[in-house]
Amino acid sequence: MKRKTARWCTVLCLIGGLVTSSSAVAGQVKKPVVNQSFSEPKEIKMAYHRSDDVLKQLESKPPRFSDDDTKPVTQSETNDLTAVPASTPAQAPSKTVYLTFDDGPHKVSDRILAILNEYDAKATFFMLDGNMRNFPDSVKRMAEDGHSLGAHGVTHDKKKIYQSPQTVVAEMDQTLKTIKEITGIDSSLIRTPYGSVPHMKEPHKKAVSDKGYQLWDWNIDSKDWFYRDKRLVDNTIAQIAEKSKKEEPLVILLHEREETLVQLPELLQYLKEQNYSFRALDAEMTPIHLK
Ligand SMILES: [Zn+2]
Image (cartoon, rainbow, N blue to C red):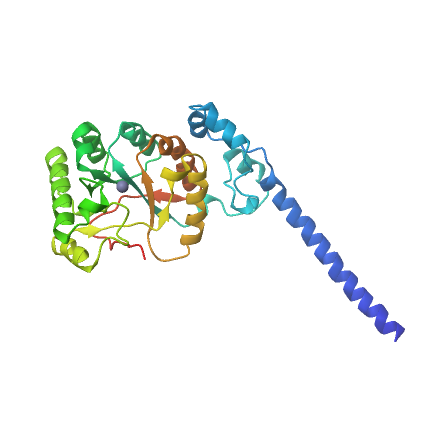
């Protein structure tokens, strides 16, 4: 009986030892990752320095992720991790996100385009007719830079545009015609204001489909119009982590707004480090819809 107990003790001690040593190894591996000295990429610093208020707000908030497994790894951190055989973004398979910007063009369009250019990112702009007439040069530049252009309508007024299937078609017709006038591009991409749910009933959907238009919603909502600060980046990243497990293309809803512009470099930097590439929607893709 005593010998049996001794044997069990030996086994337990061995297990205990293994657990302790593996924790120690995990601790060693994790240590550089939990390092809080997050060195911001140059672009992000530039963005933050645009507004001291934004910076103060960020400093007063807890770090984005308490679980540092999901924290973006910066270049300085990867340098510290030379001994760790963790997969780097360069080794990971290529992934794609589709950035979409609604409600433009806007006075910030050119700066959004410059940032997209810096990250070699293509995006899709769903635009309002009147805004295109106000900023035709931005629309031209979007086309020249290889982004996709789509219609978001004329009134952006639920009561007007969704009045009937014909009113939806009329607004989209007019907006797509303006895209053609300004850029020469025949687009068939549309996104209706506030998304297709609940306003686009079956007859509305049939009417735009009969016209050969592709009606696009999104599956990642940055809620940039609501957050207007760094939370829009956090919110988007959290949804990407969740949605990337599914088969659907990752379509991110953003708006052409000053606050979105300020946060855009950080979002793009994070996605780039995660080995995402940024592409524009096209007429061959099967659109996704809100459920
Ligand atoms: Zn809109």
